[in-house]
Length: 214
Ligand code: AMP
Image (tube, rainbow, N blue to C red; front, side):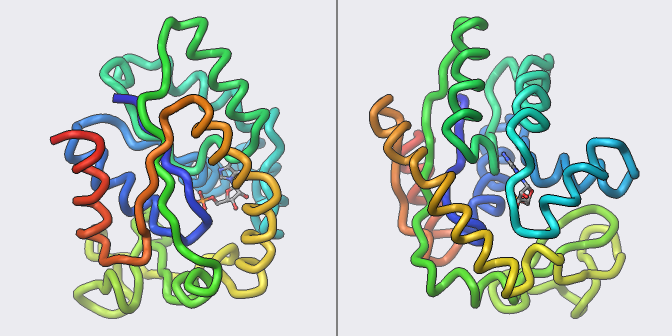
């Protein structure tokens, strides 16, 4: 099953993507995670991506598309995958479609996790990420066992620069301008499904599984 997760930054699509990847035993491919890993490792891609990410802007399509197309061609993707945070623009969606058509494949579902803007800023200021392994938490909704410490690897948690309120507002504007048009794009392709992302994360998960199939 090939799934795309859509939704505003902070809608919880990353959390759902990880849960779905576990359930369906397919890779979770997050472009945000790939960029952050590159930043951490000090690669050329990481240096370029950081300039945009820190400002709440999208990394240019030409740095993003090939990365994902190469990834979905790997062996572990043959039974499907979940794309989280990609595509984020119409050109990215077109680039993915062109690559899939060439491979004789197609996207099965684009899941839009809907959350109104007013909920987003509050949610994101409570988000915490592990400096070491990238695991994400929320001080209210997904707390760690020990405050400020990653459950998975025991390292320190931080509020990412791109989750700070001023950056979040900018990211929401970018989302509405550049990413929201994808909802219509995937509706026209007949693969869009919508779920209410304001609910508890397990309810959201169950609603998605209900549609995608057990
Ligand atoms: P995320 O973890 O998905 O919220 O992504 C964090 C940041 O990485 C975004 O605000 C963008 O700057 C960048 N990014 C992630 N995915 C993409 C993408 N598909 N296209 C452009 N920029 C991206």
